[in-house]
Image 1 (tube, helix red, strand yellow):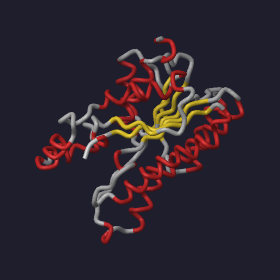
Image 2 (cartoon, rainbow, N blue to C red; image 1 turned 45 degrees about the vertical axis):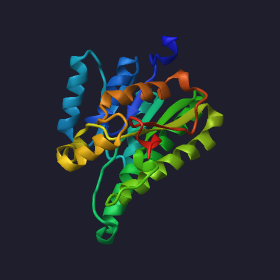
Image 3 (cartoon, rainbow, N blue to C red; image 1 turned 45 degrees about the horizontal axis):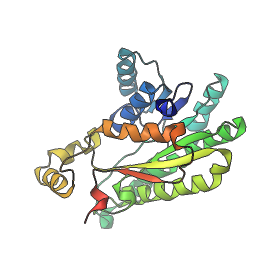
Length: 255
């Protein structure tokens, strides 16, 4: 049964993958046999991430580009075409957070969060899916949502709108691309111990709220998302399409 989770011979592009959850996805898919392509915007983070993988015996490629830049995305895919590197798996993980009450929220900040967290998934997936359709070999697209794909919190309206959009974008991709043997699904992480959440972990009141509200009584770990990513990237999920899987310790299951 383990062979259905084997990603050998597949190439995966993971956006926002030089740190945090993106790096965990990249590391996990590589350990399952995939060739991985990292994405980021900071050279020092890319250098560190590639070095960490190399120390584990994993050779990966890295591309520095903004996932909100349509021309940059197309240029990267053209480079991959020229090198005859075919992307079989995409994980749209790149994201940013911005906290401010809506009454004080500038349009530019709203748009920036939506561009990076939602529009980027459309742009990267479109570029990849065009090539998947042309090759007639199918593919896997995994969009990273959030608990806010289902429920809102105050002061993070742009993030909530973007992650809610990710849920329905995932369904739209499934509706249009399933006929080409492309499966598009999403992962909704709960509160996970990452750099992005460091300030929340250090906030005693918030940390206590997370631990007391979650049935598992703790934060999640990045590596606890990897199994779901491998499942959705592998042939084990070939008849799973348009779904969001929440890895949240049971948070959304309770009141």
